[in-house]
Length: 195
Image 1 (cartoon, rainbow, N blue to C red):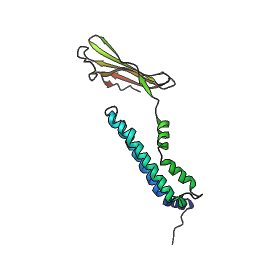
Image 2: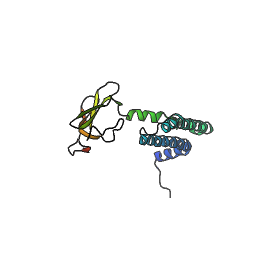
Image 3: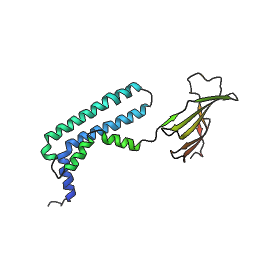
Image 4: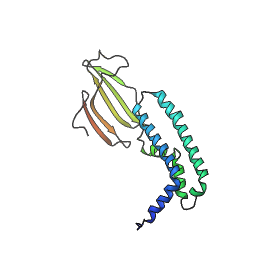
């Protein structure tokens, strides 16, 4: 005896059976893009050449190949996948075979960009202090002031900030000026009362 299947289960099964190749192409392309973005964010500013090759050559070629494969599959299976009953799903999947959804999600989830003013070094009491001021782009509202300390002003070498440790009160602001969070630093260690 067969177990009755709900209508929507049958619809999903039929749609996926017809659209599975396009779904797999879209899924693999988007997965590779997400993995590439995670890889790029883990690099930071370490390897600019690799970042440039990945962003300017490999990802565009991958998306071009994805679009070509999706078009070929659409042409080969046009009688099945462009029926009125599944046309909306077909168009949605074909859209997912382009970088448009990934770019849209990235733009929606992206935090506001910030920039810093030139770093200021001061020396007093035999210690060196470094101050960074960060601001939101493009409106110029304050994001955070960061202070760092080094034990001896004499030991500091040009272009070597490795001996500086986080110090002082760091207040982060939202774009509207409200306090986002506060961190208290003493000689490179975060105090327990940071919020």
